[in-house]
Length: 508
Image (cartoon, rainbow, N blue to C red; front, side, top):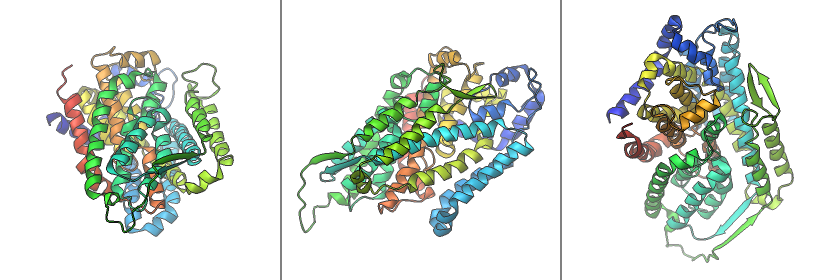
């Protein structure tokens, strides 16, 4: 409990005193921080932090730290996402694209013209393009696959489908598994599906399930691209994955047994089930395979892959072209029976695209303050596997888990004098080449994936699953309703148990 409270104090320190600490650190310009800042991370947050001091070698002008008040647009966007569908639904659904883009542009323009910082917006844009290209391709390709299950929706049948989805998420990603199975899951419970069905689907398939491979969840894939071995996540994450998934499955079984109307046998006419399984649009699995293969075409990992070079960094574009091409072709040549059967439309991915434009654009100052404080001597002294678990986790639920993962990994490495921009040092960090480093990486990896289920915006698939469920007539809870009714009473106690069992009392 002491570590739990201590971790919260770090978060408050980062958010409310980060700007003050940052100004103090920049003024001192100690030798230690010059080393850290010279070893800048490829991520947008670290790039933003790394250009806050004068580069002695390049002779660049200093870029100022983003002021604390610049976090307000991000907070305002989160507040509107939470309250819009609840209190001013018509206005929100009509204007959310303008609001998200407008707030993002406000922050981007401040960086460009007031802070004279081009690097952070460029990196944020590159990360957003990578993010939305993958999600769009997986969403559209999986939309052309129609899975029909003619079986009674018993609690055991539902749990089985959720566990299968969690396993599949490690092969085609949480986005691919979510888009492939959310419609069959809703149809399995046709006429009886309730909000808790969808929430547990988000918990198990869209987040926790994808903890075992870099393909499983975006944060783990970014870690792989930075140099973490492919099978590292399987080796280190499986005990916590098995515990969390089992606990969620058991909890869902008893909740569904008690509350599930699908288990009500008081129907006037008894339905006869064939227990058959059918699938239309199998060829779209080929498109999914191409998408998964393309994610490895990263110029920072494979030499010779064409790239856009900016500020000494290599940005992928071949991978994104392949993904967007697959998105178009998979829809163009999809089986029309599958498209109609799934009631496929582009609204869920459109909503995600606009909402996350706002999130990626406005969260730059928050990530910058977190990263700069964590790399300061004061922040580095606080870094342990316990504080990394709670810090990465809590912020992953509200800042999107992929950039949060990179930011905390960069901070953890910098606290030991290592750089996330050096692949060999990343590999050494994963191999426990620094004191407690493998355990700290495990805390960051598990927290970023598990806590991504805390809110609708913690992980990309969450919002799409919510949108698809609402289009199918499921009354989903609001942003705060999701947190209050499900995350706090169900998910947070589980995350606390994961911490107690795997981190809290481990001495290193």
